[in-house]
Length: 265
Image 1 (spheres, rainbow, N blue to C red):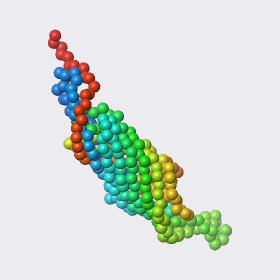
Image 2 (image 1 turned 180 degrees about the vertical axis):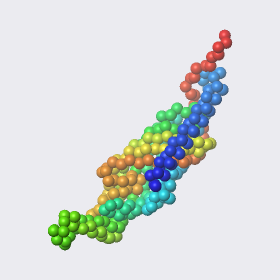
Image 3 (image 1 turned 90 degrees about the vertical axis):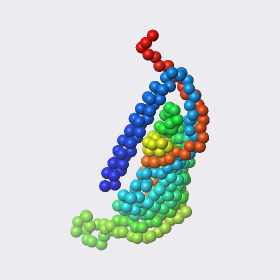
Image 4 (image 1 turned 45 degrees about the horizontal axis):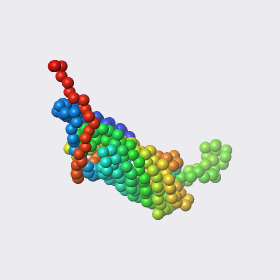
């Protein structure tokens, strides 16, 4: 069920971004028609702060048992193409796997930048970007239970399937004061659906740098980084809904556009 909801949500997001992009293209064509009489015009670009929320973690808190999480996002435009970016979040996640049941609680912050590779026209702030983050998390782990194989007292003549029994233990052990550092390479897009309201999607490739592990256990999940079962590398993504707060404007001169020509002499 949770995977079906995730796919439906992803499809909805992609359709919304496509519709937004088509509307922007229509606006661009209309704008081009207006300014074809001028070869070069000055335009004002908006600079400001964009704040938002990660819809993926918010929705998981409702449809996935044992997960409670919230992530706030933000970016600040430094230049025409460069943005300072950050994410701040909190997660409580109870994971019940085949052999281990544990709960992770913690907070995290990511700092970095995004570079916008999309060429906007007029005063739009749409983005197709790539970027970098440095992430840091402090958290605790609680080992709720684990299952091990143990030699059985049953006679071997009863068959090979009776040699071992599954034994579940419930230590309730807490591991506090844990931390992790990692880097992320980010790629994504943000489209303005309505005035100053943006919908976005990003994919992240993560690499652990520092992982402070507890004695006798492991950090199987790190808030902000996600699962660590595959070693030091991980993958993440988010869907963001954000609001742009314009603070000031800068005048820029766009690239020269060819003058419109007509069939008449």
